[in-house]
Length: 331
Length: 238
Image (cartoon, rainbow over all chains, first blue to last red; front, side):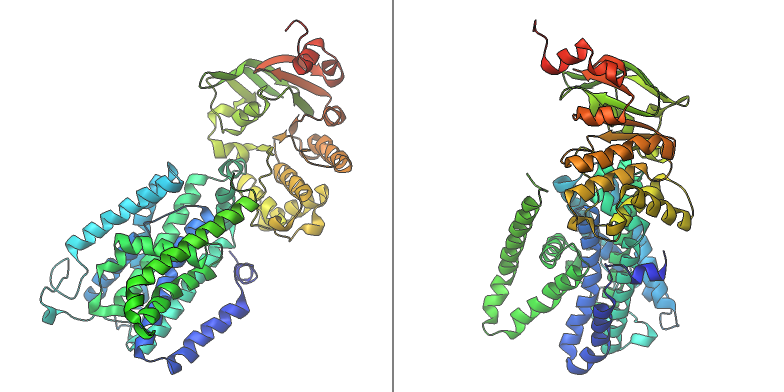
């Protein structure tokens, strides 16, 4: 996997990516207030999760409704480790993110196992059920909030401690930049895979499994790799989420409604390009708060914003179906 | 030489291949028969997509049926499909590279040389870096062929490769198929309904009908065999 090969690949548009990165790093912090810095930090984190879903569905053809599960597992592991370790020590926080990502990746492989037997709607149902399982588990054990014991839950609100952030990014603006950098790195990892041997294998599996087999591709291995990588990305995002909200983490981020909302916005954003993940994160974390908080008649938006998202999703699916019929991909 | 012994495939109540015993002698061989004769089923058995109820497919003392499906391409079983399966989202180069990096071994430079060499051989150098979804059906057909013959295949199965091609392109395709054994050392098996293509490419041909072997031998003899004519145009007594 060579750097030149990645940078020259059509999935990576250096000018646009560079401009967006510099805009996020230097322009946004100087023009946005604290509330919107908070929302855009959440957008950077959500974009990683959305990219993991989009990669699985758009590049490998695997419909997973369970990506909130590794997101939640990564959050729990990283938060737990952050309270246990001396995070401000340089270099520790990235290791915690990687640890959260790796544990999530192991669970991702477990989620991926049914994918070897089922596909399409059945896979969607199986992965949704696994997400529900993780939701139930997180409901029972809660996210750590600086309390004692293995679970680390502080039951009295006054006993809660904010989750430590990396020493270079303790403030909200610095942490926003940190989240943007991590999101950038995660996207680059995704592009690196897509631009190399696994990406080509995934494209082959996605288009036709018989053809992939006839090319000597070990379909089992590459499907599991896709689930593992996607779960790793979601797990890293989970760790960032913990440090983002500190002691205010909520498992509502990882429940079944969040799972369905995630796939809805990812489909609306588009699954054929990683840019779709950025758009999906924008819909979910910027547009929705903007409609419900800033637009006149916010009660209306509060009530109907999700309905409008649903309509948008239906239009998107109808258009996609028509496009697929036109290409002869559907009968 | 490919020795097929007592091969039977059952789909529910339908027997697609019925105790077929047949030896492909090498070179470029034809496999013909009316629709539903079992030609593609035989290819699917060799590729690992279909598990037979009985039989053996032996090449160089190795029974193909003992190998995992994905390992067969790595061992050297390659094929094209009736419906073109070139990967839409990848470039022509990447399409062929995908097969070479999974089904053949070699260093990075060897791989690049092998892919470029086969693209030049089939006449796709001009569109090397184009994404497949932007290309014509003709180009896609030749991408399929390039994917099947890159590296060092031992058997190349061509499943109706000329479908949808104009006559002048079919002649170009015939030249490629004819030269596969000499170029790669592989045995090529061609399934097609275009008898002129089969005649142009194959010295030896087998005929299937309703899953049974009807005739096998030199192509010129087989095409004039009464049993073969009956299989295609129907038996007068029937």
